[in-house]
Image (cartoon, rainbow, N blue to C red; front, side):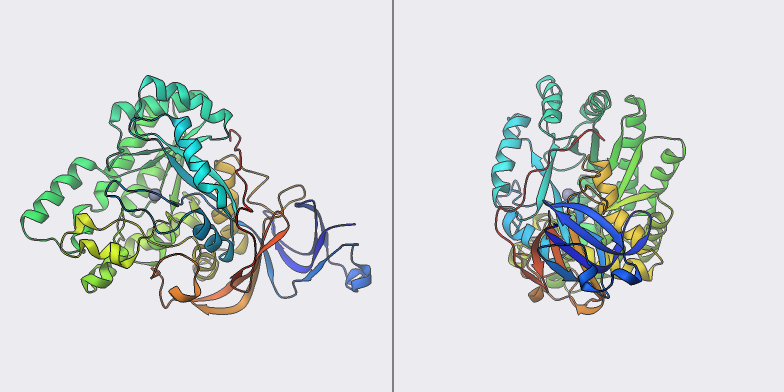
Length: 463
Ligand SMILES: [Zn+2]
């Protein structure tokens, strides 16, 4: 006797789409029974306490968003708008069942203190979650603690080349070397700090202070240079596996392509905002323009095209969100000085509908989109095959997706705790109509129906 059978779904597995009845027991996928003519009668279904009829719908693996910033404090006293409750409710309704957020080491603190603090913040999470660990100080103690993180289920580290938490090249080298030794992976935010600082100072001195100049301060080569540097340093540091977050442009992708072709373990992420929005947003009135101030900034249409190609040819393996919104009032603090705009945008709820709708228009299949949004991040970050795939034995993290449901995205239909969405007015063809986490229904028809605190911490294995 199963707990639940999802009847007649087009099940999106890694190998292809199968019409099947999917049976769930104790929160796991217990069986995938291809539909045959003789078992289409309900009486022929496997015995189960509950049945969901999924006719006409696809069954997708629950989304894995490997890049969110929930409840994240900035040095200016602001905090990202979504905490682990609102952010994961939004994730659930939008078809994401696991997020990997960033525990962030304090300037004087240890990694263990940071992990404890972030796990406390995440107590109310409604989807499952893992933690990357942000390293802001690569001293002997921190390097030694990296091994303790692995035993805590943290198998990836985050480093920044910009902001207050940036590492020097020497520090980055040491983190990479240590990571290679431990078998973990280092994720890196790549921009050239010196160049963008100088350009910023110069712009402000020239009276070019409006929001649109944020993008001018950090052009594509600022990112490309940093990506290239990280790839060269990781190659020197025992060929340490490295994951470049939020790639936006040709300048960074072409470096990654070259490194990958030489067999370096280099992995690339991009985000829906870089695939679907472009720098024409910076020509809008400053009050509108602030919504799109993020780092790295939106790029040209040509870069967008390059990113879609990189998804198709496998150079970019992951589409995550970098979800880090701030209220419009907070964004508008920098109307007259772009350096005072808190950076970041929305996406945790919009990612799955956007990627399945727009991805298919760009020639990606359901199976390919499932890999980009669930399977690949689960594999890279040590959650596979428990997460990110529909196969027997995996967690029953599932999304029922209606390909015929057309939705116009507006901020008032979303559950993100913020008064705008970067995708206002965009129409998507197809939408998640039900989300299940470990066999429990979390969201239905655009509403959250689960419980606060239902999410669990996922201990990750070495990939
Ligand atoms: Zn980020």
